[in-house]
Image (cartoon, rainbow, N blue to C red; front, side):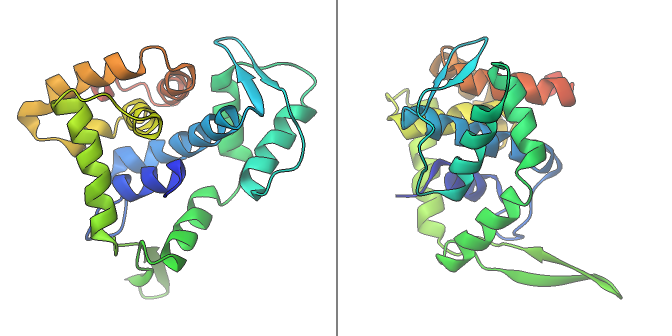
Length: 211
């Protein structure tokens, strides 16, 4: 099973070009740090409410990214709200997006390709290799948003992150966007961390068109 972070990236990437749209590129790192907090909450390592994130179990984890995030929160002298930690971890977990993309290429989910941009410069892009995995994720999202099926935990969290990052509207046809947004609001209304991601994004990029 893919991690929540891997699913976010697999869906946010342009399938053929292997890069991110402007909207996805500006917001994706907030979605990734939101996914980290969601995973720590699921593992019962943190307790979350609208005002604070509190570490409940600081023992080492078999995951370096989760462990680094947990250590930062545990070392804090003050309890901070969820949106603070989403923005903070976005700044301190250097190379988060790049590292996960490289791991996904190693798993054959993506292809890693060097692209020449200027005479002396190149960039790396990650076209989707496992098209079936991406399609399966999209199918899960569409069943919840457009057919109003009940989501499992991971799909509900994924929808929350994609909605918070302004990416969700681009995953459905134009005529379905109003219904998809309405359903996404229903699914995520009580999700403290998804709404904290949304708050962190809005604080940085005041774009009401996202929502």
